[in-house]
Image 1 (cartoon, rainbow, N blue to C red):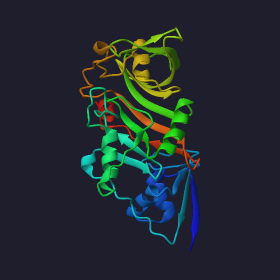
Image 2: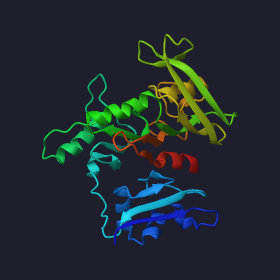
Image 3: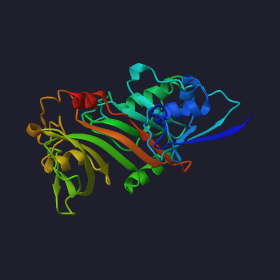
Image 4: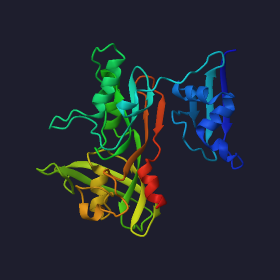
Length: 309
């Protein structure tokens, strides 16, 4: 009995069943489905050397799944937050929490003081676990109201400072899926501009570095339809509304965007009260342990429904 280290390399001949992270881990551990979830919840699973908290993650040839655990211990799944809180926890420890933000929620209160925000819900979650004594989490970065996906919040000031330094230096890796209007012929491109803000708080590009913040967006085209394109987008910088502004100014606004090129962003098959923009992947260095952390959020149903019509 003691510490165990098992690994599985995914190759061309690996059965399809084992190309999903949870199935690979279950095979390695010889565990039940419940215990397999517990191994993910307790940080025992690594893919290509990085912690993996996403049981649904797809694996491909060349990926290596590692399992590091104590075979004398039973790893029960962590208690999930009540469903009424409305968000999914991907990872949490005493320093930070990583969650999936639903579309339609503000990350933090707006200047109008809206209170039903993600940061409030997470703070309420910790307050209930602290016998009602108020607990506040700290926002590190944000997603627009109509955008879903991965966000990290700090649980204390030291973690906040460590994470913010990374975001200010643009070191975290952030990847998105976007469905945009029109057919993009160029397979990949980079958009670079300086983003400024109008009096109405609308963002726009300028070539004058004294008037705006440097914004760099990379994208590649994954597939196209008759009147839309599906993109993978990587942020080199993370300015407010950056992806929305850059793609709209390029003539391909995100579907459902009612601020930037709203007429062109309307699509008869995108009937959802949200943007066709999803923050799928977030990778950063843990501010306290120094470990590389990578988290993924599966595509929302709206995206898969749109593609299947």
